[in-house]
Length: 187
Image (cartoon, rainbow, N blue to C red; front, side, top):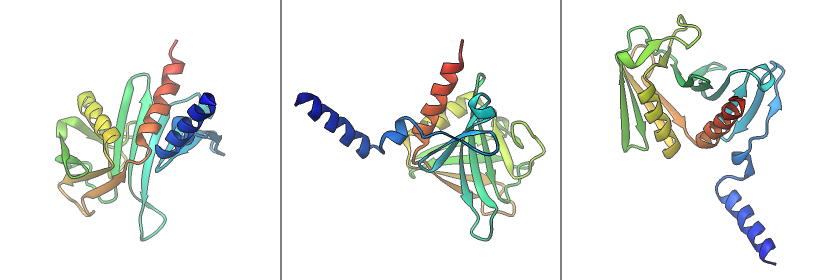
């Protein structure tokens, strides 16, 4: 009887914190050859059928059409975490600073020396920056784990609205899943 009570308590606890999908995402093979899993509001992707680099992505749809209005991508490889931020209209080449606010109480500011224009593999991609400061990245990821919503604002504003709102539901489970994969790859 005690075993059944413990199993019921564990199952109830799993439901209250988001269910078993949070602890072990349901991976599937995408037609692009990537291993993917949905982790609440986030998509975990590992290239080369799971053997290649992994990333955790949250994209926001543009209400005016099929394009994405904003996206944050968290990459993990043997060098550690990298963060890319895209927002429609963001002037990545002339951007002076990024501000990261969490639940209206926690703010991190990144200045020009903390990021570069473009994606990590393609520096000529518009409206995108890649964070380069490892201490900033570590602080940002911890705040994302602890927060419920991330609001990214930037200066100069450019042609966009200068704000990207990122829900954080599932980010901790996604970060943990990718960390586990990378740890298992270590010799």
